[in-house]
Image (cartoon, rainbow, N blue to C red; front, side):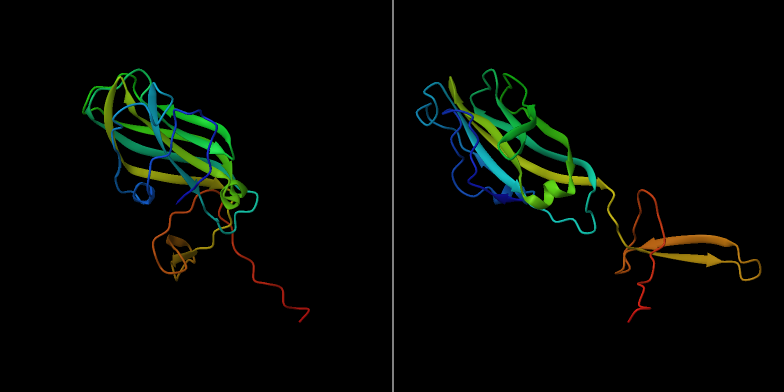
Length: 208
């Protein structure tokens, strides 16, 4: 994840949240300070916005498809309660909204919830860097209010990636029967394969 200056046409009530948002993308906390009035928005309300770009280059995944899931926890600090629509977690492809999860309406001070969005993606979507996350939280509407966002996660599960790992067999020396096996990464770490498992073929060097 990285910060981005890409803006989405959501109207004047959605100004940027000032400063870096890197602490949120790395799993830490990001505070949305309360606005004193609605002058930074549309004159009625203000939704401060943090937008990040999802950047990933999955190896050996050409043509793979799967699901991208993004979530974050939000806490309403106050001093005022929520008013009607309090915020949203949104996922965009380019400037097109794919899916959103809205925060609880009229949330009381101290309210805590986790917002989650999921959508089908391809390995190309991830490699192109054309997927964006927007977290919009209302910092003024009738009353001023602050929020804390934290526990941000983003995960993609792809089907069709060609992942290499080592499978070690325990064989009965007398019968040749396979008694057990274990799987590890090429670095020796435990690995649990998903999907169909096949044997890698050695490269054909017969023409060299």
